[in-house]
Image 1 (tube, one colour):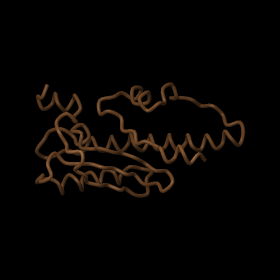
Image 2 (cartoon, one colour):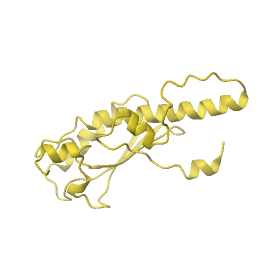
Image 3 (cartoon, helix red, strand yellow):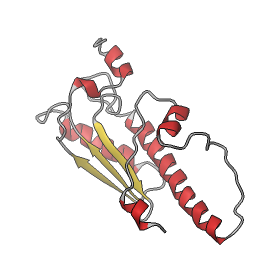
Image 4 (cartoon, rainbow, N blue to C red):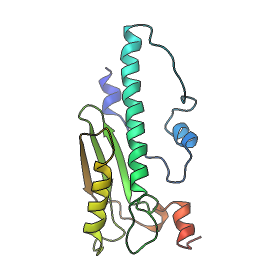
Length: 158
């Protein structure tokens, strides 16, 4: 396994309003949907395992996003993902942990405990990860520019 590529792995979180094809293209996987190339030799088996891990990571990330879109701030009629409160989603196949960094619209948010616990419960329901590492962060500070176009329309910001 190439340790250099492992150390420089970047987290990819698709834009909230992107299609699957757009998200795949943005992640550098354009044209890979439905690619069923058979494994021919040991080198290919290693590559296939790595690709399988990437596919699994992508599937788990997509499921996590789907679940995050069911979590709402009780004071705002938009889900936490489209609000831009999710900063990072990363699944590491080596330890099978789903790492998620999120923030709140304000550090003193009165619904913070409720939202955080709802996010945690939804992420724990995602099939695949053995554990969830959910971190509440406040850097960078959240602002309205982080919302999806859909969220801005819903809140009449456009």
